[in-house]
Length: 191
Image (tube, rainbow, N blue to C red; front, side, top):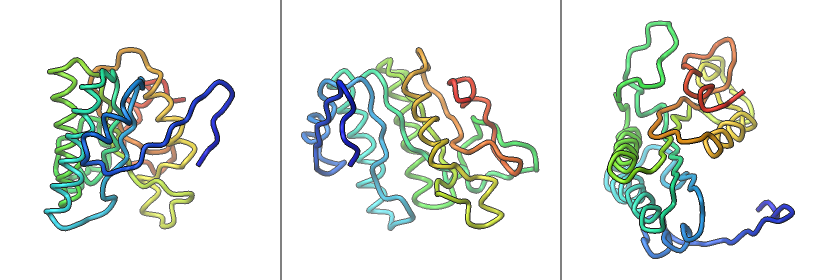
């Protein structure tokens, strides 16, 4: 846990991402939610449905009920894992082509975010994270790699950009092997 900085107050709320009461408590009095909860890898359908899809709905609904104006949703490249890449940079708004149950859950989360942006006027940014590790590990991972420092900078840009509305953005680092656009990330203010 990171200690609070000068003038900051930190309150920890523990519970399930599917527990509306816990989520409402966590959302009370905050100006933004960064939604990272759920199964982080492939899981059986029922688990993805209950935790990743149901939990994402609960996060957005709790945020709405507590008047949180902005939700940043951690989506994934698995939301478009079967989209053909032709060698050019994949655009930020690449149509969903999930490659796993996990990817389907991320597509559902993006759709929930879109609904809450349009129906309830929330600012929603869905970050399709490639692979966020200290180092890319394998040469093929470099094309979708997001360094932890770049991840922090991207999330900061998502938190501070004025009136983003609904956005889909790639969470990747700017390297020569990058497969995905940084257009939306740069429009959000990522440097």
